[in-house]
Amino acid sequence: MSTTDAPADSPSARPAERCPECRSALAVNERFPTWCPSCEWNLLPPEPVPADRTPRQQRKEERAERREEAARRDVRERSEQVFKLVSEDGSGLRDSSAAAAFALAGVVHLVSLTVLLFGLGLVSGLLLPGWPGRILGVIALGIAFQLRPRLGRPTRDGTLDRAAVPTLYGLVDRISEELGAPKVDSIVVDAEWNASFGVRGLRRHRQLTIGLPLWTVLAPQQRVAVLAHEIGHCVNGDNRRGLWNGSALNALVEWYRLTEPDRTRAQQGPTGLVMMVADAVANRVLWVLNRAVYGLVVLMNRQWLRAGQAAEYRADLLAVRLTSVADTRDALTTLLHWPTFETVLHRQRTLPKRRPGGGRPDDPDLWQSLAEAVRTVPPLETERRLRAAARQGDAVDSSHPPTHLRLRMLTAAPPEQHRHPVVLDSGRAALIEAELAGRRERLAVDLL
Image: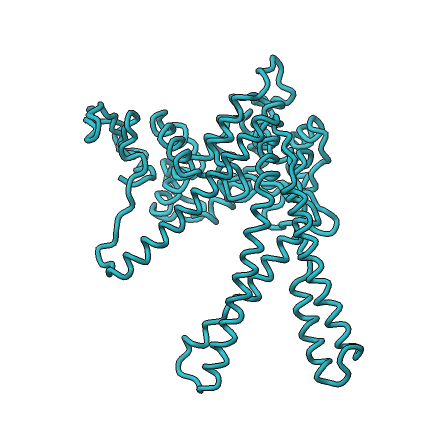
């Protein structure tokens, strides 16, 4: 069976079968992989292997898989170390890695500044008089322009006007007030199975992004937990989002792009011997530079790993403070249901296209189908996804701790409160849904 859901209208279950490994009874559900909770047989169903692979391709894929597994193992080990340190330190982890990342960012900025000054010196004639020096100076200034600190730009597509969605902005402002964070400047609603927060541009524009598919399937208090986690990055000491470190990493990414070898000429057909030799030498030099830059990116990410993952744990605990452990845990668990979203999306795309203004009354709605599909994911499948995530060390992305460790960290959260500081009641939840109706229609069209 595939690791994603089968059609939602499949029969829900069949008579129990036996595990081929431990002979335990198995619950079979045609929407999901059959697996054994006792011995974890088929916890990760194997991917189908193409029948036409050559032995060379097979060896190449096996080597790539070993490298990926080694990288995953390294990340798992580091994440476990961070989890242990944060658990012992009450999520207040601060160590030398943050200082090292700050210093490395300084080196990146210093190199960019050196290229800029070198170009200015050549163009002005101070370093090398004459037109050859000026030509080199112009090239150096062009490179310096590409290496400039990238502050990012606020996203415009999907940005909601405060006057058009006052209830949503009011909820976010209330959460910011409770956390002691500044108000967000804009809210973006997109089609991702995620939510995020970023500070962009020279004016440090604070932008909250909400993935509408994820928002759709969350309960009201789970939505508050997700918003509190994202806004918590304003006050949780996350130095990755600062101007100094963030712009350095963006500059490194640009270095990586500039030094990528160009292999398009070799694919365009035969060329002269001189051009072939020149291309080969240039690509070899670029490859060495590109690997060096890649190493710097990896080094900076590793320096950020401890402080960054500790910041994510602190953001989770801020979400608990505004909602509850149960709400925050359920919101994190819902992130694992992205295969269900992909399956619903695939099924919706295979349906006949609706005519503008028409369509049968029984045509399924994307958002209703998604909410129903996630709601009916059985506990056994949720448990499989949790165990699979723990085995593979799955996370939202490389900057986050593995989801299973975030869930484990919540067990150390403060006791449940009798009163939640922020409550999204049914009335305000309905108003927000009405405010997002237009955006829902547009995103459904874009997705399908």
